[in-house]
Image: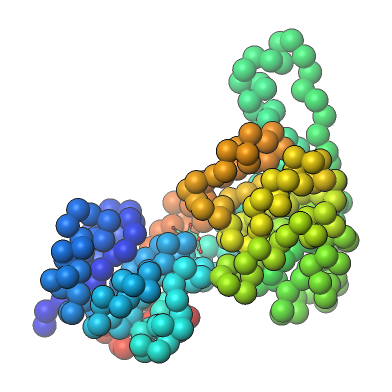
Length: 312
Ligand code: 8YV
């Protein structure tokens, strides 16, 4: 039997391509000549694979009339139009759970980095400034109040880690937490008012666009710290920059951005932010687990007719 033809939308590690080629005829959409491939083979391409944060455009889905399955490399599915997929009967999968621990670890790393000024202290030490002056003090994290927006599996993993720092846990989420001692709030402003850290672990997409706005950030207050390990789109970046510049927020730790990989210069100029290039799940172990699940979803679909971790 001939191998199914699949289109890989965004660049993925070469070993993933090698494994995919054992099962499929693989076209790489970021390579020169990809548009011609879509024109010539679009009518027989049955599968697609894409990085979660990139998704697959609705226009491209329209150019693939034989598309049956989209396998996402990552947990977020906000960058792909799921309604279009549903109406076309296209199966969509993601890679839930295998990345929870590393994403939560990154959340804690950002909380510590901002509150203890770890990156600024590293710059200070590297520049030899310690020979002339002592590093200015930072703030304590243990025992402070941790607020979590989106109490899914990643939110639970952040909460468990924060609890080990003796942090009381508060949250805002459509779903009740497994631990009834954690305090649920019925609005983001109420949550932000009650905590020192606001950690974002909610999905991106139209429903959550800019829900972290100026009102929420001002409620978090001048001693508050925002940590975003979710999607750039959930934060109103202009408002965030303004409150940081005005001293109305202590700091922010950000792994994701609205126009990534572009980071606004005004954000880069601020000393009280720690900026990461969307690396929360980027460890060798987790990326391997994500790669295996992404590929196995496609293999399972083409052998058994169903993906292992379906979204649609
Ligand atoms: C990945 C992510 O960085 O899982 C997600 O939704 O955004 C991240 O884990 C990304 O999908 C890999 O490019």
